[in-house]
Length: 124
Image (cartoon, rainbow, N blue to C red; front, top):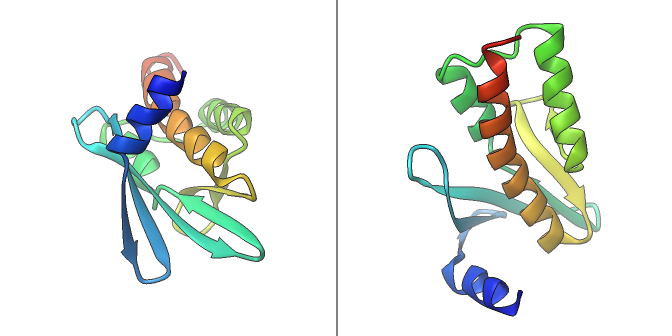
């Protein structure tokens, strides 16, 4: 486990963009781009977002969230990771004190959404 955390720390890049910190992880999406998360301080904690990337990517690939069953599947998947969809901008969002575990959750959630929803989508 220590090897994994060492690898993750060494391969993760941080960049400051105004009041946000862009975290580029070593995980790849389906386009072979590195997954990115944005973090900023807010109300004594942190807000983490993917800036709408995963939901936009799903829709652009034909996986529209346009039925009650798809909405329920999306909500169930997000709830399992403690993630909400922010009303404005359709961003995945997590607000919590334990930032590192939430970064891992939002990254895992994005990977899970991509694989679970795109494979299930065709049947719903």
